Image 1 (spheres, rainbow, N blue to C red):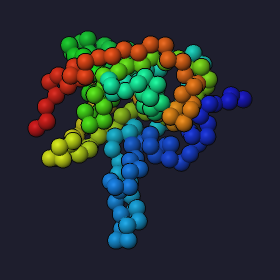
Image 2: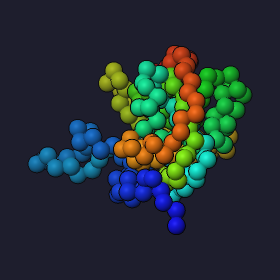
Image 3: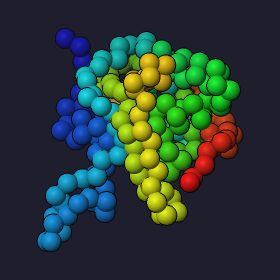
Image 4: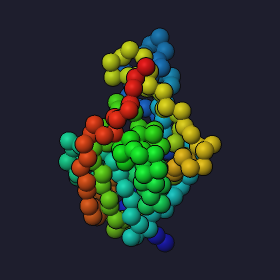
Length: 198
């Protein structure tokens, strides 16, 4: 029987909800007259997350904030496997985009979440459990609070359909199940080229 480094975190009821885009921040939750949380907001996440096993040797990629330490970014939950990363690269090359802007479009990452100035490639050293699924629509408030950012998913277009991974528990220490093989820093402005708020 396989022993997964993050089985406890993956088994938490909050793990699947987080993969579906549930925002557990109570300041953005719907509350009743007494202040009790009735429902949490949902932003993005994935459609129909399914259990996915990452075996030893699997290569995964993660983007993060350009000014953040590599180790801090490696503790994040959202990753893509090699085949999906190659799809991102192909999309960027075909359309003459930076890899950061390709990630913004296909992985549905608004600027409010990350400047996408860092890319990490890691190898799984201990088996991990993940949720895997296609990205869902993202609607969040703009950083200037003058409206919303809306990203509709494009899953009906095969060339833009991209599975993402949600790996719970990396921030709690399961990141030791990963070996960071390489990291790259990009100009954060490249992921904003052509980006307009209307």
